[in-house]
Length: 420
Image (cartoon, rainbow, N blue to C red):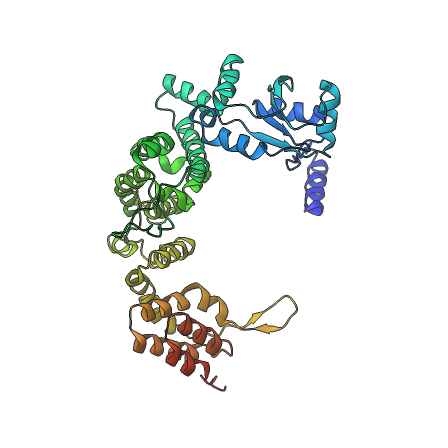
């Protein structure tokens, strides 16, 4: 990269122009009080600083309280943890005359220490401290801004991203509901994912769900940054009935946008995240309702298709996997070409591996899960003829064994690689 930058500067000088290139260093943890003060001033935010000491057992609970409490999580101040050997921690202790005990510090955006205690504090006291110092945080700042400018799309989308991230953190801290009882009174094994109780769901996800619908219904959501929507990728959002319902209501708007512009990647990304959040949506039905631009037969982005297949597999929606990947395999066979892949050492590698992992393995697995063993066997043998592979017998055999098909696993393990 450096030679290119130097050449750009030289070209500007030779052309009689002044060329100025400013490269910002990547952010790193501050190591001195001066660096911390500059960072806080640049970010325009106060922060919690946790100084760890010999007895720091209360620190994890303090962090959880910041994320779980309604008031504190809404303010959403960043947290900086400093180990006992940190130079910054030593400098701060010396400046303030503190000992080596663990303590929390509330620092203003100009680097001043506003409050500090050696030990835990209850959430109400911490919230009162913030209010007493007039600290609102980014979320409150945006909420106040939107009250004055309700149609401001950038502020809406920025706030939505913060709501989603905060809710995800708080969902991770939410206590699990007690396991349901069996008829005989014994404890029933709880599912790996359980819906949040109504009151808790409203407290954690209510603002995010309402703003999500507001942003989608605005019609200009395709203009916003992708990071706003990236926060919905995590499966914890599916624990919220409010987010599920909001996603279901928002999906028709996004689907209509895709019918108007099938090549809009952000619309596809938003659709995929809403569909996953809503508990699944038929990609095939959507594809069938879209009229692509001539010459653009494969209008669904590869990453969207791959992510959708992963979600369908996790839900056990094997019919959707077959419906999407079956035609893809039939079209693939028609391609008359040979792939030769070379690794970094210049050695030939098994070119089928990527094809197998991305769509052939899910397709074969879906047929096995649906009980269509003959169809699965047909595809595996066609794959071997299409792109002979020494690795295929082992991959296919392991897959069959994992799907409870030992006889088929034994057959596939002995597949011969065609010569030529």
